[in-house]
Amino acid sequence: MVDPTMTAKPKLLIAECQGFSDRALEILAGSFEVRLADLDRAGLLREVAACEFLWVRLRNMIDGEIMDAAPHLRAIITNTTGLNHIDLLQAERRKISVVSLKGESEFLKQIRATAEHTIGLTLALLRKIPSAHHHVCEGHWDRNVFKGREIHEKTVGIIGYGRLGKIVAGMFQAFGARVIVNSREYANGTQIDAFPVVELAQLLQQSDIVSLHVNYEPANDGLIGKSELGLMRQSAVLINTARGELIDEDALASALESGSIGGAAIDVVRDEQVKGSASARLVELATNSGRLIMTPHIGGNTPESLSKTEIFLAQKLCEFGKGVRNQ
Image (cartoon, rainbow, N blue to C red; front, side):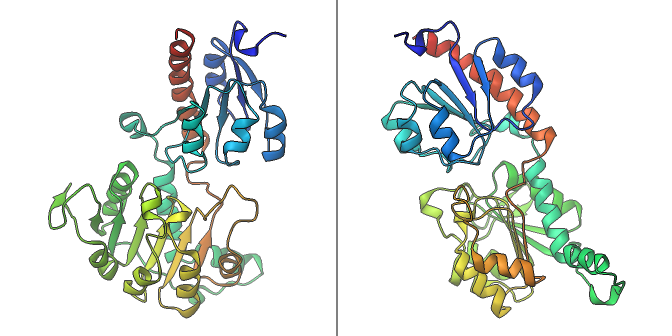
C-alpha cells in the first residue's frame, strides 16, 4: 500500500471552495495536488482521510474528531486571524501546524472589509435602515417614523486597539466622532494616535457607540456581560464584528428587551460553527425589534479581501510546504 505522504505532491483539500481565488489556485497547483470541495462537517469527516493539508474558512469546527479522521494531516490552513474555529490544543497534541493570518500585521493593513462592515452596521442601526427598507417594501412611505441619529459629534468607544481597532477608529474619526480607546496594550490615562486610552468602565459610561475589536481568548469570554451593559448609556449602541464569545448573549438580550441600551448590531454569535447556534432570543429581537441587527459573519466576506488573503496565504503555504518536505 502506497503511503499518501510519499506522492510527488502533497494532497491539499480546500474544504470551502466557493469563490476561491483563481490566482491562489494557480500558486497552489505548483506545489500541491489540490482538491476542491464544499463540505459540511459530515462531508469533511468522510473526505479528509487522505489529505496532508486542509484549508478551511469558518463553516466547520476543526476539532480532535476531524483531526483523527485525517491520519496524514500535517497542517490546517485558514485565511482568518481568529482561530477559535480550530482546536489548537488538539492540533498541538497531534503535531499539526496551523497556518493562518494571525500576526501578519503589515499585510493585514490592506484588508479592510470587516472595518467597513463595522461602519455599515453602525449606520444601519443608527439610521434604522433595515426597518425603513421593509417599511417601503410593504407599500408605505412615511419618513417621520424613521428619525435616526448621526455619528458626527458622538463619542465612540473602541475596545481593542489592534489592526481593526485602529482602522475603525480612523473611520469614525473621519465622520467627526470623538474616539476613546480601551486596550490592554496601552496604559490608561495615556494617548495612542491622539485618542485617549481609558478604563473599560469609563469607556462604557461615556460612549454613544461601543465597538468591539478584541481577539478572542478564554480570559475574555463574556467580556461584555450584565454589569458592563449596565454601565452603558440608555441611548448607546453596541457593535460586535469580532467574536460572539466576547458577549454574554442572554445579558444582551435582556438589555435590549428592557430598553436599558439603545440597540446592538452583531456579525458574530457564540459557537457559530454549530448549526442553529444563534440565540433564539436574539433572533426574535432581530426579527421583531428595530433595536437589533444581525448578519451571519459576513464582515470579511468580500471577493476583494478573500482573494487578497487567499493569494497571500497560498504563497505562505508553499514556503511552509517546502520546509516540511525538507525536514
